[in-house]
Image (cartoon, rainbow, N blue to C red; front, side, top):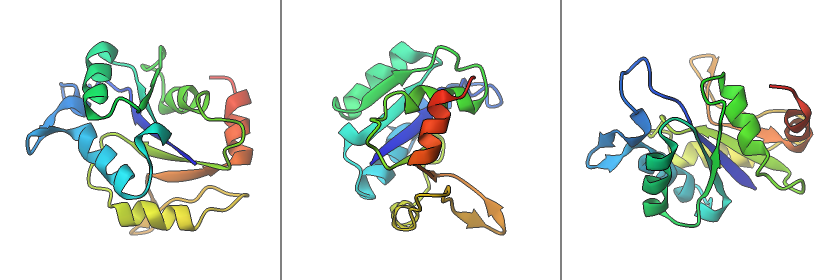
Length: 153
């Protein structure tokens, strides 16, 4: 299984590059990576999709763990789907599920991620809900991975 960590955005609403923003002395994205690894993902199984300020972001990511996979989205100014599609291109065809997490959600608990993984379903997307609303991260089954590969941007 692979995890896509979407971290391509500019942080326009905030006015700064939020993925590299320091929280308690560490980049925000490091906290999100910690949640993924605590949930059982090895760094080599995480594909971080970057775009804005990609050179600096890639350098910071390599300082976290050099075995992370980094995918550059040249169309990062488009909707999130362009980043998902970029990341999916790095997922092996044999992969049954892919977890899609957002780099700017450092407070997602590893237990939440584990629960999503345990509910994996070959026919539908699995995602957590809170107060009746769906949220990230989400688990995409193989059939949708293939549909995303074929979809136009």
